[in-house]
Amino acid sequence: MAEIDTSGGGKKKGPGVKKAKKLSTRIDLTPMVDLGFLLITFFIFTTTMSKPKTMEIMMPTEDSIKKEDQTKAKDYCTMTILLSKEHRVYYYIGLADNPLAPPALEVTYFQNRNGIRDALIAHKKKVYEERLNGMPGHKADDEPVIIIKPDFNSQYEDMVNILDEMQINGLNTYAMIDITDVDKGFIAATEAANVGN
Amino acid sequence: MAKHKLPRKSTHIDMTAMCDVAFLLLTFFMLATKFKPDEPVVVKTPSSISDIIMPENSILLTVDPSGKVFFDYDNKKAKAILIDKVNTEKGLNLTEAEKESFKRGASFGLPFNQMKAYLAIDPINQKEYKFTGIPIDTTTYMANVNELAYWVQAARTAGQETGTPPRICIKCDASTVYPRVKDVIKTLTKNKIDRFNLVTSLEAIPDGSAAAMERDATSPAKMPETKTQ
Image (cartoon, rainbow over the protein chains, first blue to last red):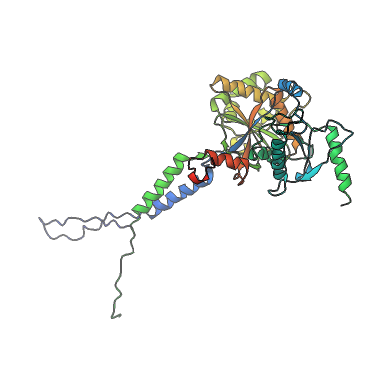
């Protein structure tokens, strides 16, 4: 342990003979190390090395929404996605302009297999095939358009997940707009039809 | 009396090296990290593959699961200008000490009429304060009525005066209901702010997806065998 020997003045051999005092200079550094690690632990718990990650969103401003109405998306390119409660995702191809002819609503979730991602991949593939088939209105550079309508009982997590799916699948043309009563009617009808199952 | 005396070896270990290592690690942590910002409420953000880092000079709007909105701005100089502006325009009658408390403080979520009471409390008790959230008026979303819009507009002008205009980041809990988030986003878009960031936690890009192929195409180490053309 720490020793600084200061007791060397006991014996005197006589005048003229002085014994040199030998002082031990060994300092015990154990408490210093303890302090160092204590401070390290403090800094580990109270600081962060990485800044949080974010997702950039660009929403249309109020002025540009009127312009968007003029360039309507084509029916075959468009997939409308409705986000509902309990992380449910309803989707259909087209814009459902005609409320008397409700489209076939599919329902799925955000799982990796057979979820909305596979549906988006299938839609993208279909659009790339159909745009070359020369039908009227089909141009070779048509891109798939996704319209996202979150319902009032969906959660923020659903919104982020669907925007993430856009990025994962390389879909750049999408819009997030308010859900219409027509769409709410579609969801209600589908839920009523599945109540018995 | 023991005939065989056990040879005693010295048990002194030289701790100098250990001490050096400890202080080296300590210096690293002191220089390379920043203190975690004080959060008024624990928010669990959803995950996404986006890896854009949160911009430095930004306004952070935190929304907790019950829908309360908190405001924070990490530019100290702009915060000083901001509190002066708010004080004069909203007639809060804040003292210099209360303004200092605002500048040094963290996120808050209060309507204007409770600001003075909150800033008068000392910092230790400020952390325990029960916030009610910044009210968002959904009738007009305009800055003269909607408090959140006012804070954001005021912070942006304060930021522009000190140099760079700030980015807006929204940190929302995964379980917040969508209409509340819509109110916040609509407040921003109605006030001509159409670009903002959503804070998410990082998740890996799923293999085989379009994003994964894009990432592999731009990665520097591309094997010659994978070239198809």
